Length: 132
Image 1 (spheres, one colour):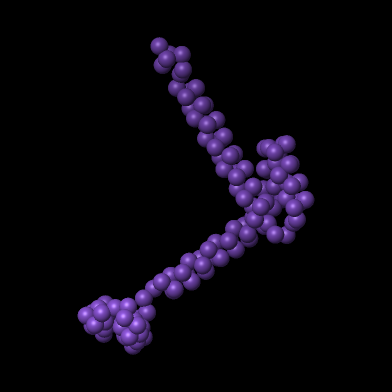
Image 2 (tube, rainbow, N blue to C red):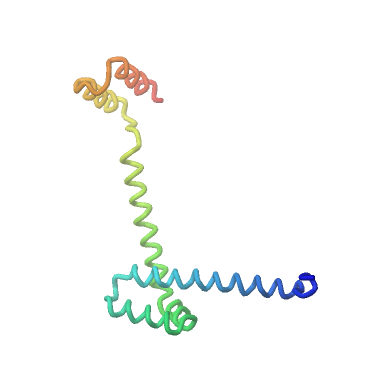
C-alpha cells in the first residue's frame, strides 16, 4: 500500500523541497530580469553576472541579492513609476472629455465631415449637456 510506504512526514518534506525549488527559480528569474534591466553596467558586466549565476547558481543568486539589493529596489520602483505614468497617459488619452462644449464641438466637426448623422449629433449633444 502506498500510504504505508510514503509516510506523512515524507509528504511534508517533499512539499517543502518542491516549494523551495520554485522559490529559488523565482529568485533566479528576478535576478536575470534585474541584470538585463540595469543600465549602469555594460554588456561585459551583465555577462559576468549571468555566468556567475549559471556556474554557481545558489551562491551567484545570493551574492547578487546581497550586493545589489538597493539597486534592485530602486530599479523596481522606477519601473513601477514609469508603468503608472504610461497608464495614466493612456487613461487620459482615451477618457471622454468632461467639457460639454468641447464634446459638442468635436461632434459638430464629425457632423460637418459626414462621419455621423444629425440624429447621432443630437444624441451626443444631449449626453454632453446632461453630463452623462
